[in-house]
Length: 344
Image 1 (cartoon, rainbow, N blue to C red):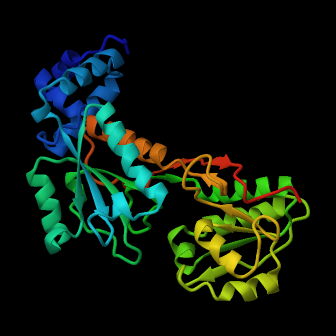
Image 2: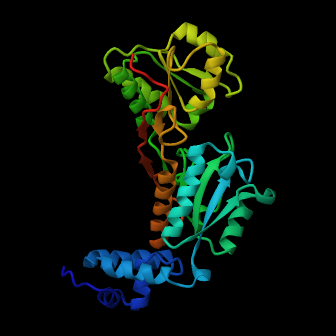
Image 3: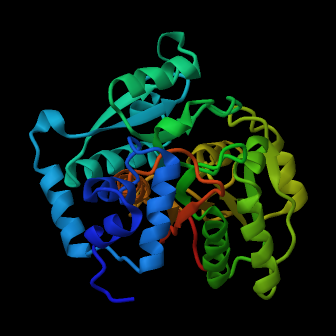
């Protein structure tokens, strides 16, 4: 089929107007789904391909509208406190918010933060509030541990999740590659001469991160010569560190790997363990690049920006609802040398 197939050609074949073809190809929800599917099938059969330069021009024209007409993207905070995402969440999670907001502004979109538990709203009412405000894009941020998966009216929104995938929801997710991060930590420790890496995390991490941290360390032991098995220490919370002394004596790790190395460091000092003199300490989530802790810098701002780019692309394709199969975009972390490891 000739590459000169146009919307006029499709309209003639399908017996509709060019305006209808345009809206169908843009997935405009004002057109019935059956009509959209039929017109899109005709376009595919004829070999129609949109001109990317024209598409880009139309996006620029839409983004050049008055500020009051610019679309708003909802940033949804699912933590227990309305200010937690900005103020008390871990540094990586706070940076995700900053990165998302900055990227939205760069792309010509406005953002507004909403607390999922605002005024005791039900998920149905919360969805209705966003829908009534004409909001079609939803960036789902952190959720409180143990909280149920939000039962929002997902069919109304283009949605992206920042953080670990949610098994009960086929939402598109953008997160750090936690498996590769832990494997990378083990590789860097191995280069320095460490042979007994031991993971210290919470019981909840095993479920929330789907065993990715444990998996990366386990595979590292198989790939790298001389690494010895060390049982992980799984705690109920970071306030109950008493089991660590017995674990250190029993397992004798020469380097501790943890997502909360900053919490463990003062406790190790109280136990009389010097870092890195007596034991190495590697973080799976360094607060920032150049930090004193050795480990992985996840670059939360890049994760947030990538999530926003993904969401904006969905909005500009007029996509709504959840995909039938979950999509996950993983961002690799960067090794931060720090000062909590040494050559041994």
